Amino acid sequence: MVRRTKIVATIGPASESSEAIRSLVEAGMDVARLGFAHGTLASHLENLRRIRVAAADCGRLVGVLADLPGPKVRTGPFPAPVGALLAVGARVTLVAGPGMSDSAMITVEEPGLVGDLEVGDHLALGDGAVVLEVQDTGPDKALAVVQNGGWLQGRPGLHVPAGRLRASSPTAADLHLLEEVVAAGFDMVAISFVRSADDISRARAAAGPGGPLLVAKIETRPAVDQLTEIIDVADAVMIARGDLGVECPIEEVPHLQKHIIRTCVAWGRPVITATQMLESMVHAPTPTRAEVSDIANAVFDGTDALMLSAETAIGHDPVSAVRTMARIAIRAEAEADYVQWGGRLGKLQRLHALPGLLAITAATSAAAWQLALNVEADAILCCTRTGASARAIARFRPTAPLIGLSPSAATARHLTLTWGLLPMTVPEQATTDDIVWFAVERAHAMGLVDQGDTVVVMAGNPVDPEPVTDDLRVVRVR
Image (cartoon, rainbow, N blue to C red):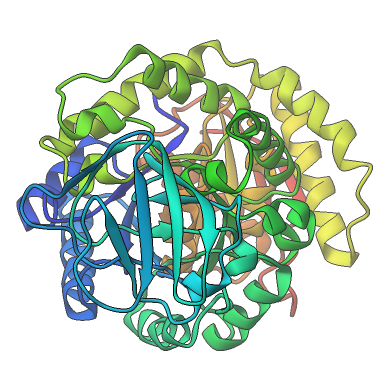
């Protein structure tokens, strides 16, 4: 069975060699994530090159996601190599300025941040495993008690309530990196600590027309409160559950996950479920039962993609983590009721008015989904220049194999993030008839459809000044 939920794998010290990246591609990595909070621009550009080479060698399209740091607050370094243990109930002083951190005092380099903390604030360090509660404050220091303890190493990130951050997102440093990322040809860019639609609009203006997909990371309470406004201007969404679980009550996170996924799918926006999905596999050869259930439930929720972070960046066996996630996703997909999902989505879509040409594409994709069910199509071929129509049909989670064909290599790589889509590039054609004929021929030549199969083809007129998918056909493969 072909896996339809995509896998995003983070490239890091454990996986950045050419051999390791090729192994990840062979294991099923659909999108490679490069975290710009770590490493140098030069190292990320070199990894981009390695990913492109590995994907070409394996005959696959692999998207590359640049994850910008955002207004990330970090502590002073803990003693190397063992770090320090923060025990539950221990009292810790947070001090403004540079210097070393230990189990009794944590230095915070962000100017003014310590003085802005308030009594009752919850602070998370690293990936949220260590949580502090502020009990007393002063102009340049604060006293906190450890609520959840653990080991801290290096310079872990410090998550504070979004309202305490003075810097907006994207930061000036992010915008500079964005220019470099666009010039280098990255396929997607994640904007960290998004609080409003304006944050995405600022990034869009900096990226310029025809740039990479912009992925809004939902990890703050304001972002949850303005979800639909953010989804309206973003190209995709990432549910960053680690920071979200600090901003919101932890018991709310599963329900927020379901709400965000369903909203994104209804709007035709790819959505990534991220953070601690196979955390135990950073060190262990097999996942916990709870992690397996977590991945399966994200698939049942309808997520487009599942993300691995430390598991592949610094884990002891990144390839095993990808293979394990792939097996779990395939098994969950076998149980998912996608026909019922598509039926509910059709009703939901009618509640949202879409402007002009988008309404035509949405209606065509809905008709294609229903038509494919009625004729028991062996495949759905979506011919697309921008990727919009392919994402529109994918939101219905059709049971027939879904193939996205585009004359744009950039568009095809964008589709590596979208559920169920097998992207491929095709030559530009002059007429709609040629587009349809060549799409069927290409799918047949690739062994994706056989003689006698019935396929549904979505296409548009290549000479239209504005892309719109308004042609729907049933074709018997000959």
